[in-house]
Image (cartoon, rainbow, N blue to C red; front, top):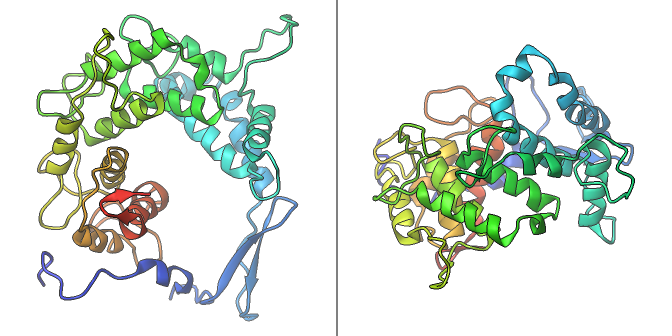
Length: 345
């Protein structure tokens, strides 16, 4: 079996997604899920002999996510994970945007979705002149997480700045349509912080005092954050703010591609992993530098699907839910249907 040569094009795994059969539970080949207006999901199943899967109760998920902060407040678990809080808030807010989105029926879909998430989670600062309330919004909290000395965002108030939490903070601000709270001065500080993390070979470390750990996740975070700030290709000779070497950043990511299977690892020579594939393909897409012939990568991604239908992150491991979105289908979507003359649209 020669993994590095293929006589036929990569399989169209999207064509088989709707006809997956699990031999263990004899599920029907045609089971289409539809969202009902009361917040649940029903299953349209032609096979009356098979019991319908459980309903997806949207309201329960909304309640769970919106109450996570209260559940962790003052607990041992909350104390142990407070350095991860910024990314946890990002995932929670992103989840809420998916759960409450009414993009198909609202005229002003974005504003309506933001308002609904705000009502559930306290996302936006109050516009009321009454300052009697002691509660602060998520946007207000993000401001307290900015580290003035290093110029990035930390995982929580008083924490050291890190590239992961810097991106999470900017993603939350972007989803809330609040990027205007990032002033010109702060933008320069953020760009300077990100540029200081780039190494001579084009790679990135996560923070200024992290022992020099290099990871392609950090490369993705850097390019994504700069893109959100509108400073990816910033070349102002009058600005004291340094910029990254985008060409070197792209070259390093490209060097992390494994010639045997086409996947990407955390650094040059590291084993291919679905999470790293998502980060590398995402970074190359942002930089408009996607490979033009990703056949090996398509094969590698398609082989991540396990017998039960889920996807794993690397060879000989069990399926994990996160790989369906972050490492699996997101990466497949990038390399399967988004290539047009080497650019992802």
